[in-house]
Length: 426
Ligand SMILES: *Cc1c(COP(=O)(O)O)cnc(C)c1O
Image (cartoon, rainbow, N blue to C red; front, side, top):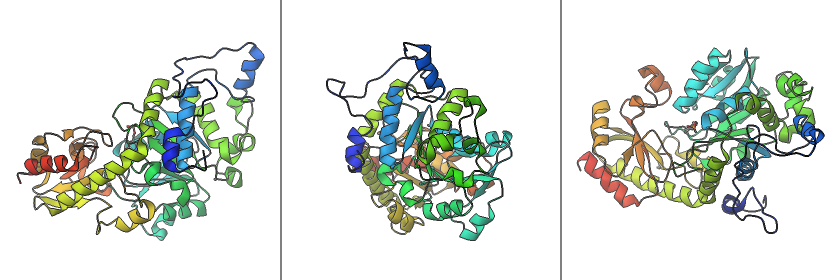
């Protein structure tokens, strides 16, 4: 599939049926798999042979869909997880443990911020948050001898900052660590971070990839480019024998292309068990089949709505990187030439109260904590996803108390604009 264009990979990647086999990816709704001899199964447990034995570790349906996402991103290996949160946690915890440190962009999803700043901190992993707009000097100054990774979002949810992926990749590599990019909002249709130097990509597939609000899920993809052995002192989990797997050294046995995902499957999925159900993976694949068609429409609707909001005197400001003049327009043109996404954020004149009143009057656009599916919806982060943050923390995440995040779905743009107009009293 690697020679085909992204649209073709969306439709047919990951799974090629043989003669007489199902055309659609089969749902293998089975927890377990049968073997003739204990020796056969023993080889699987020793990672000497590849195959399935228990769905908590691997399942064929999940593997077909993960293989499609690996093709879309241009990676060498991928795994599905039960949620985007699990993907973010695994991606970091696979290479960082108690006593380690990670540099992260400050404008990241609220759930990820909480995972890093509170829960993983409690596990002994320290995070330094830097502005995505920081200078190279500021970025370099954030590293410590125990730094194990750099993390950021291509398009941040909900701040909509666009990350200068090359700047972050260069800094990460200069310090001998990988760059992990959450590519949820951009999707591989909009941006493929590996082409700009990122090493690992994560997704909340719950968003545009599924695209129908049907299934919570996540994914981790490895570019296969990071040379763990060249920095073996930093990554003992990959570069020294794993006692819990009969002394296997992942980076030696599976190479740059396979070590990261094999370790995450063999250790983290085994121990934490955040597997995606095969049924959800099937729904995810249905979404992926139309990802390229839908993203185009999400972006068209986003731009039409952003232009309307910009022209309204009831609106303080609009953030949408495809708008000329947006702070991130130049970065968006470089990293996301086909359009950013369908999510627009804006400030309603009159502050927190005015934002709440406006949202109450919407008819077509629903209030939801969700984004990035077929139906348009909106959210007031200061009252919802980011409730646990104080005003200073909100500002550090690029959020004001009158910010409304609007996710433009696949409806007719004129109907969306009419709904916004009536709710604004225009
Ligand atoms: C939603 C989201 C997540 C978390 O994903 P879940 O599937 O809800 O666990 C992580 N990152 C980004 C950018 C998101 O939008």
